Image 1 (spheres, rainbow, N blue to C red):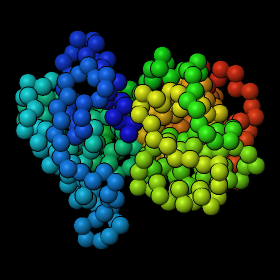
Image 2: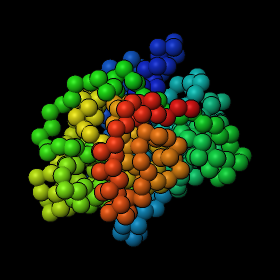
Image 3: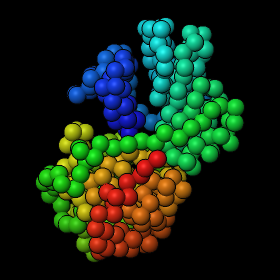
Length: 327
């Protein structure tokens, strides 16, 4: 998840600036963490699909399996949290945002919510828990937040990328796929719409699609690609430290995600790696990539395929890296 990368990088930099940072998480300490980690260690089925308690396959905020687990996790964290904490940053929304907002007001702690959930229900809920400040990741999202709840202070502080780690000078990892390689990175959730990328690349005469990630839709994507992209498709998993070499092995990056997604850290990682972009044509992606790629409606898979080929054929010089998203 992008938010985990963000928390890790931000926390390390805050520690470097002289601040004390404690990160509560469910998993083990992240390699390279300079901050203090406290692990709750709950038993959670991360691949379980969200379901309503009353009607199968209909999502209901606060009551689905993951949100109920999150409520317990958040309660355990707040029970342990130092009451002298100055700033509290909940990152998972719903029960967590609500509990943290109440805890913050009782203990005079500032609550800052980062807009990782996107232009939808989760960030609407976040805004209506009345944090001290809501941080939008783009101008578009920040304006949206001000419309949703004008009573909450909303400012833009965008996400960055370490350009010493992600660079076009990195030695590529070996990928056993026919070139050129179209790369997609992210969770395998339905709203990421990787099925559209599979359909688009299948319409190209040459080239392969490499998807890097995990999630509920993995089996479906494998079955679809087995039929549409035999010998030209792979799903792989890599530790985060190896991702710069994965980007370096690709020829173009694509991201057909829903228009509601708040950002997509993988897009700026790919740009920093010098990859041309083919992404969904929506205000957020347009703001992020600038002249570093091509916008397209990926639902039109014929056009999507043509745009990927156009991106592969074009000489981008250093535009992706120069065009990195900046505040």
